[in-house]
Amino acid sequence: MKLNIPVILGSVRDSRKSIFPARLINKILLDSGHESVLVDFKELTLPFMFCDPPPASLNKKYPDANVQKWSTIAEAADAFVIVTPEYNHGYPAVLKNALDWLYKEFEYKAVGFAGVSSGITGGARAMEQLRPLMANFSMFAIRETVMFGPVQKAFNAEGLLIDESYNKKIGGFIASLVFAAEGMKKLREGRKERQ
Ligand SMILES: Cc1cc2nc3c(=O)[nH]c(=O)nc-3n(C[C@H](O)[C@H](O)[C@H](O)COP(=O)(O)O)c2cc1C
Image (cartoon, rainbow, N blue to C red; front, side, top):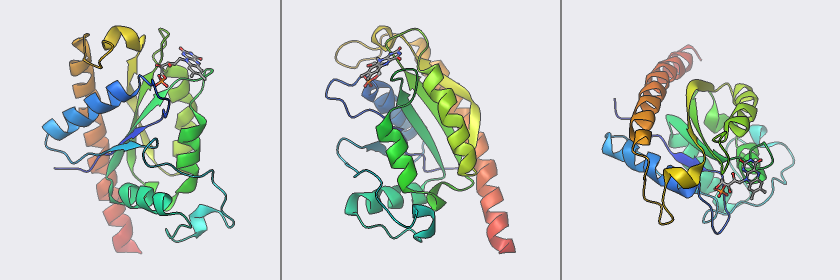
């Protein structure tokens, strides 16, 4: 089944390394026959969530053009890959802000995490802190993750993959995500029929 799986990038720093794993996962998804865009909040800049009432009750109509674009991308998605850098043992505020803007667009969809850090933990702590948020969106967060740490040993300075073992890791991760995404898609369809 061909699925639409955007890759959400959680870093907007000029010299961010997380863009290398994000680009690689995006490419592998496309090469596997899936639809995928790289969602980069450095280009698609979002304001800090300022809405009153909360976004969940806005019926997907937002007071900002880029948030509306983000909503359109998320709405069309079957599943997501979130590439999160680890900042101070957590995930970045830019990612939380992007997630806080939307709600219904995420409901009953699968998500997988890839963590990125300069240390050996490969963003593990950031990824585990993201899991409870996914439950609030009624998302299914797959158990499998890809840990890019230390990221500077996985890619060279130009962003070329130097540790080829990641190709296999990403392949297995995507297979699990696709399996979950297909299940969640059936669940959403069944739920729609009953409504
Ligand atoms: C504000 C900040 C906090 C960071 N905290 C950690 C950390 O707690 N653990 C770690 O391994 N790396 C930490 N790093 C390094 C990042 O993991 C590293 O920059 C990595 O490349 C992923 O982030 P990037 O995509 O923004 O480059 C931190 C970086 C920044 C900018």
